[in-house]
Length: 331
Image (cartoon, rainbow, N blue to C red; front, side, top):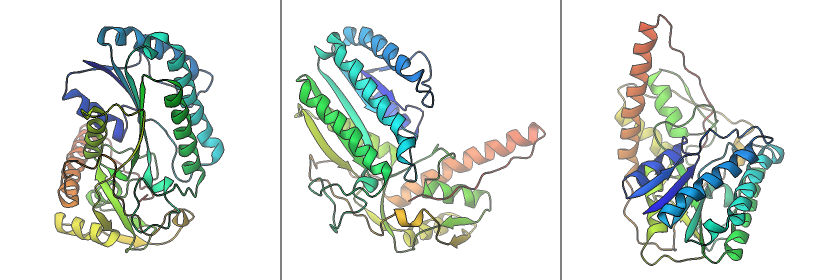
């Protein structure tokens, strides 16, 4: 039995990882209180207290895993805005390393980051783990700095395994509306609300979209592979099914009786996105085939429709008028 802790368990990826872990014989650990990610006076002590509680529970299982799926940063964030996230990770690793009980048993730290950000400036037509990182934004530089913290942690602790999971573009139901990201969710919600859809990149832009549940399964399966026992591993997690924005819009047209109303324009974020990103993992490459984008978008539409219908029902019975928020799409 393994004690597992998912930081960011309420997010798109974190909740998917929790669902995947719940299928197996795992003990899921949850901190006693919600972390105050925007309060760097309080957050370090919360992390320290949680590591101590995690250690006490891990003593009963003899093995542990920590999944870092946390973070509030986006591609447009400044270096200053991302610094607290890096500091929080550093504090976590420091307290793990100071905990003799945890360091004496087999443990793994799994860190998720954006492959699209890390390889944004890459010149390779097909990006693999052998492609050198080519960051173009403060966000990508911050992620690489965070990965370096984990590399040092793995080098200094022989019992530890560290997986750096670089993910292609995630999508799925429940994506936060407070961030300017999530093109597929943005389109689905806009169609349901009869709202125009803002797209800020050309229609021939290529991306690799992977459902959050498929990405979570790939991450956990990589960590749990029988031949594991890596000290440090970097792996791209992607569907390896490159798709253009035009193909995505076509899928939505096939699935919806109401054709999407597309508005294309450029804004200050447009230059942050490279035109084509194709991924292929050459590390531990035996993996199940992820769901097709058509199936994934169909599931997304059904889930968002159910949420929308429920919100309409609740709004009517509460005597209020439901409202929606249009967000800029991220790809």
